[in-house]
Amino acid sequence: MHVQQALGRARCDGTAYVFANRRRTRLKVVCWDGTDLWMCLRRLHRGQFVWPEAEDACWQMSAEQLQWLVTGVDWERLCASAPAQWPL
Image 1 (cartoon, one colour):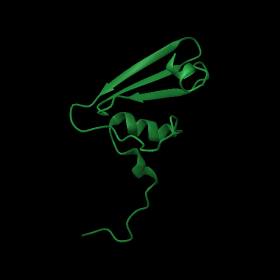
Image 2 (cartoon, one colour):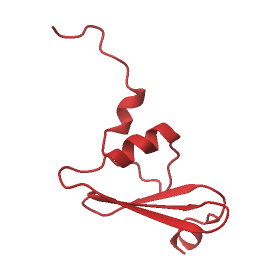
Image 3 (cartoon, one colour):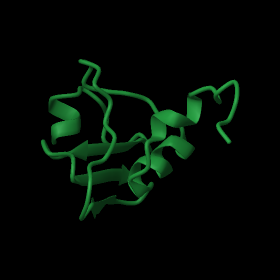
Image 4 (spheres, helix red, strand yellow):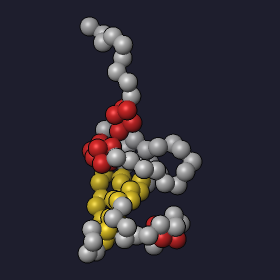
């Protein structure tokens, strides 16, 4: 319902929608698999999920970024350039 009403998107377009709570310790992933909707929940016992700070209601991520997000790793570091010199 939220995907359709608030975001104006079709819920059965094959897109995975990810929602986080305010403290960013829990995620919900909702996806249409062609037959039915399924939902997956993930909770971190320590720390927070890295969540975009942009003001937009929707973001696009690659499958690799989504995998990093769900595992609790900073997915934004995927596109960061490596330091010029690694400290020894």
